[in-house]
Image (cartoon, rainbow, N blue to C red; front, top):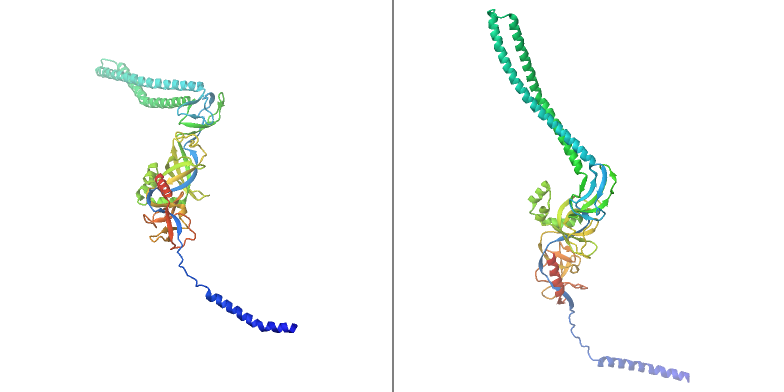
Length: 455
């Protein structure tokens, strides 16, 4: 029975296999044909702005620490006892120019001045005495000359009588002696007159010396009253009232409040970017390097500066470019540009704009001459390339050169045209020739215009 079953299965197996193949072919033949539909091209949405040119002053950013224009360590010019100290002469106080802040006991210097003045009076009297002596000598000289003339006439008469033997020889000799005596007196008076100029010169020299001593003593007396030489903020007081001080002792330290200086450090390659605009100013530069740079020189070169605190977005102080450092910083290899701010204590805004004080760390913006640039957001620059939408609404990659980064913006002088559409949104992948759909970023466009206006 088992053998019969096996023979039956073997007989019907090819029939079953053939039936399966017939069914499979029928299913394939009866399936409807596949319809091929054309695929629509992919369109990528992008945000764009219209490329516009603006007048912008190129700027570079540096940092520096505030220092006073004048930092004075006042020292005593004379010795003495401090008898007065201004009650507000303390660390941090602000005092005005020419105010009396200290007094030194003046008694000794008043006595010394009186002694010097008495010496002057003595030498002046000596000069008057010499002039009077000269007048007397000249009067005596005139009288002696008249006497000699009369005595000589008498001698001539006696000699005439002596030849006639009317008088004795002794009378003649006696008259000759009188003549010789008067001539000797005349010689003595002449010698005295000759020495008078030397005496007068010596007296005048002594007078000049005593006058100089009077001036010295007067200056010493004036030095007993100590005043501030400028509007100042006191940073240190080194003496107290009733304290005796020696000449050269430190009295106080003060700094001017009228002007501060900042040695701002800039990368050399950044400064070169501004220096390119100096072309055509060679004559001015030669004169400046010969006679020295001034604030007006830098203004003529188109350089200006503004300062704000580096720790926050505080308002700016307008600054002047004073001079350029003579060498690069040996550690940072940066160039120092010294800028100044006038009256930093008068532009205070409570809570926002404090006074610029010594030691404050500041940010300095150095600006050059205004030029025409295409301004675009910094995010629109992709490794020295920008993405433009061409007239066929296709993405176009465009390389740019000499891009100047200024804050959140990029300045380009070439590589773009007015009215082109610049892609400002992220596109990935950014395939050249891909179709895009544009949306104009009006808010960003306005913010760029506002930024350019601020510059």
